[in-house]
Image (cartoon, rainbow, N blue to C red):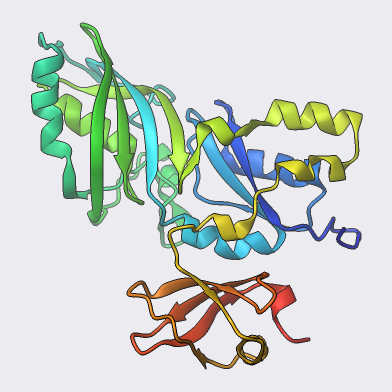
Length: 309
């Protein structure tokens, strides 16, 4: 057990939260931090208040890998209401246009959707957390200020139609980092010859963490009322499992010692992937490293227990 202090416990791990609608990601983060009595916490990418689903929360030293989880692929379920466009692209926004809805069926919808599969450029919406001169774009948008945004390269790996009726459709979307589902839905609705906005958005997977592994905030709160914060530690997942697609390198005793002192080491196992997970000679996770083509390994983010004091 980590030592206790005024700032909380020194615990390390990842909690997979099933975020409810109606709350910001930061609100959920602060609640999880309090429930676990953790000294440090960070999430791995914001979900809109309207959105629900998988929100990994990193505690303690695991916050050092949260930035890399931001780069992970994600999967969503989303429902679009056709015929109505809002300023935010979802039902939390103000209606700015109403258009007739053309007749369509699953076949014609698929004909439109397949145009959006693959690599493409996407312009981020004004209602986003991206910043312009230090100001979040959504704050400027609420003031009626429009800022020119650069397009970003994204990849839509797959889109599956889950449901359709005369005025809505529901999709499952697997995509790369940086994808705005609200923008994708708007673009699809325009391609159908109308407008549309998101009325339901659920993130079903992040970095291989499925919704089935997520725990509700309500469950954590109930258990915390009945027991100590330590009792919640059973929900912590190992940080080394978060980037399971990164190759694992187990260092020798001498290489472990060198790495702890910030020195680069040479290993026998060489992987094409530059990003690696580092384990010491006792097979304890040390953190993240980078490997050159000739097998030289340097540290990127080491956990504090891996650094020489």
